[in-house]
Amino acid sequence: MNTNSTHETGSVKDYFGNLFNGIKTTVVGMWITFRYVWGVKPVSIEYPEVREVLPERARMRLFNDVQNCISCTQCAMACPVDCIYIASEKRPEGEEIKKTSNGQAIRLKLTQFTIDIGLCCYCGLCTTVCPTECLTHSHDYEFSQYTIDGMKYDYLAPDVIAWRERIVKV
Ligand code: SF4
Ligand code: SF4
Image (cartoon, rainbow, N blue to C red; front, side, top):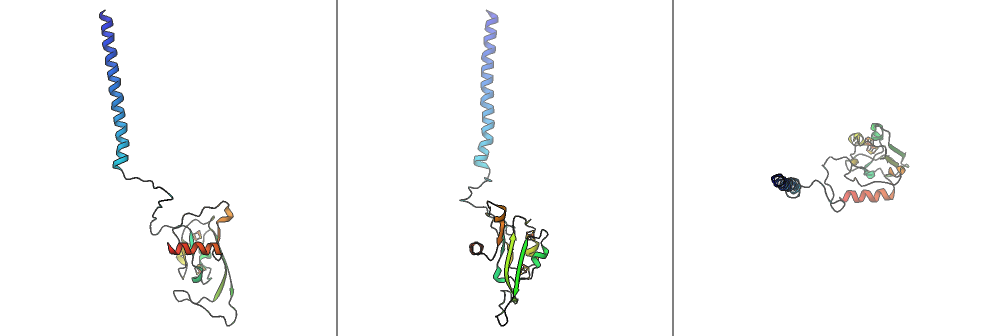
């Protein structure tokens, strides 16, 4: 009789002990959750409705304002991975020589300005050497493509010009 009574008391003690431990660990676990719900600033954003504001000097997709490009090829020469392709030709005799926005004469006619962004390592050297500052890194990071060839951007092509106009407005 006495043995049974001791055994029952032990079971009740274990039961309440386990119950207490269960509640305690739940409260501790939920406390961590509640701290993140109310106490910690969220680190995620609801993309694409909300977009990341990049640091001012962030280097994303390259942008060439070709109207200000003088075809000097300095950017292509500075590029460590040779991913800038430039072609130009002499202007016909008598054709008006326009100027860039910083006053440099545009003596050559740019016929090709392509960057293979798939090869680019975003080092920024090309933008640093550009004498007219027409080549810059934009803040556009949404330019994924289905094929690697799609990463070759011809900056004289209408679709890239349309993209450029969108970027300039941003
Ligand atoms: S950022 Fe660097 S790798 Fe990319 S095109 Fe310019 S120089 Fe070349
Ligand atoms: S360095 Fe600037 S001006 Fe010269 S070719 Fe490159 S983008 Fe054009």
